[in-house]
Amino acid sequence: IADNTILVYTSDHGAMTGIDGVSYGQKRHPNDESARVPFLIRWPGRIPAGRDLDTLASTMDVLPTLAALAGVEGELEGSDSGAYLASLEGTNLAPFLLDDAEGVPEPEAVFLSHPSNMNNRGSRHEIVWRAIVTKDYTYAVTEDGEHRLWKNGEGYQEPNLLDDPAYRETRIDLWNKLDALMDTTERPYYEQWFANAAEREVKAWNAEHGLGEGDADREAGKAFVFDLSKSEPAAGVSD
Image (cartoon, rainbow, N blue to C red; front, side):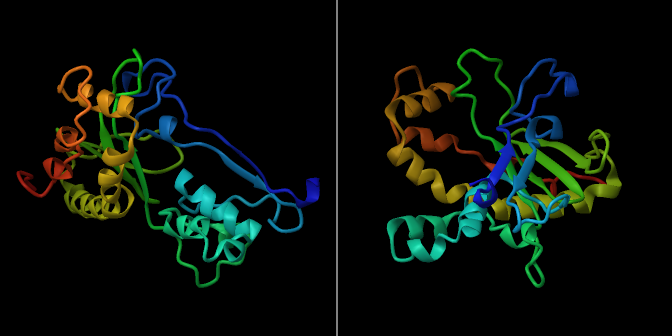
């Protein structure tokens, strides 16, 4: 069994541990300390041992990748499960793990978000944000405007480059790419969530946005979905 089992070691989130003044094990931030998690995978005889990949990846990629490694796509073809698997936004990273990725384009970006504080249950409430991670940058915005622009590297994510005029075009480019990512990873699911979420979740969402405790109006809450346009950097930025 050990030689024919795909073993994955990962985690659900990191912890801020003092970064940006967040002094305890809080997640819900676009910082590496919060958002990055390990992903170690073992499959003797199939996945080469000792490799360290720098391919961009997110938790959305885990299911399509494992399904591909297990070879279940053919078995599920024509079924509801097969249709669901094909509809997933995650990327199949199996070719990169198997060292068989010639001609396969690498993912160019990863989408991150903290969409709501409705399930914090008394924990401190954090900013609501959306972010894009590329190999070179992490760029995060809130509905109050741009939040962070960091160069990615081996050390801490500093400084925040939003005020550096040399990165104005970088910010515009990353904002546009984030907008495109939201078109596939988030916006298509708004209607589905408001239609199918448990009533307690709808009440929590509505309460967070000032509609009152116990308000389960599924239409009213739609007015408060994330508005990326409020953070667009092109307006009001000087060189």
